[in-house]
Length: 342
Ligand SMILES: *[C@@H]1O[C@H](CO)[C@@H](O)[C@H](O)[C@H]1NC(C)=O
Ligand SMILES: *[C@@H]1O[C@H](CO)[C@@H](O)[C@H](O)[C@H]1NC(C)=O
Ligand SMILES: *[C@@H]1O[C@H](CO)[C@@H](O)[C@H](O)[C@H]1NC(C)=O
Ligand SMILES: *[C@@H]1O[C@H](CO)[C@@H](O)[C@H](O)[C@H]1NC(C)=O
Image (cartoon, rainbow, N blue to C red; front, side):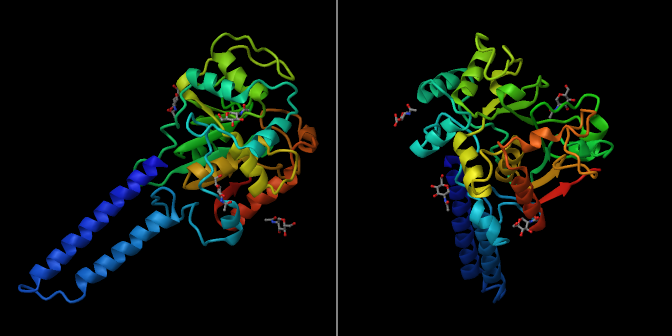
């Protein structure tokens, strides 16, 4: 927020200087030439563009189409809210009462530790500020691939296309080794929760999605003492992720996805839809791979050889159909592209 204000101030200063110089030119140049329309036209055009930069987009964005653009779709404008922060930081960690009580019910945590204390301890171990990668300093076009785990990636040969994106987000148990031709080899961010953790390459940022207080305690434990070994299933005692590569998905953002985007469908959002909405907030263009069933209607993971392993779809926890409708609608209004594989 502060960075954005600074940028806006910078832009405004530039704008004022520009007007000043132009009027200076207008006053002193008509003795030589007589520019009747030119500078004025330029000022109008310039201020139009400036207005576009400031109001249409959270960050200056140079893509042909930027996700954050308003007035493209009222369906989108009703749901999308720039002000909701995707990542938990030391500055935005205080949860509102209703958010906190909603979040506590997600996995029905029995005796949660004090959240304030846990967060305080957490940010003594991992950086409590925003991932510098997520802060966009210069004007540009950030292209992101969000790679789900669907079996429709098998023999899709999407690998090189996926790797060509600036950010490649993956989730849960997804492997790349051995599947590069179809899923690519690049990962910039990997979304996990303790029970879905897998070993990550050194330069990958881990985004922990906390569904309970214990998940935050697990992060602390997994990079320090290794005392937590079990949640509702066994979880890794220690993880090799560098502490400065650990980011925390904001619990209030989970609630935002649930309220604004899922309209309360399912018990809580899946990691898949959480990744998609997250990407809408940090990227200018989003391409989805590996979401949904394969062409035969099977729901399974690309690294498994059992096409009927779709039991997870009907767990009652997530509403897969409603979530698919949201991504399909995002595609239908050209906010994202979906590559369906085979
Ligand atoms: C957007 O989110 C902010 C921060 O959570 C909230 O204060 C505001 O009311 C939201 N706006 C809309 C239109 O829902
Ligand atoms: C955290 O601290 C805030 C203010 O200091 C307080 O209002 C809130 O109730 C605390 N939350 C918890 C879960 O202890
Ligand atoms: C991460 O490291 C791997 C292996 O060292 C390298 O091939 C890859 O390009 C790196 N990725 C990024 C995003 O820096
Ligand atoms: C999403 O669901 C609504 C209501 O059932 C339906 O009208 C719409 O066509 C669906 N959108 C897509 C893209 O499937």
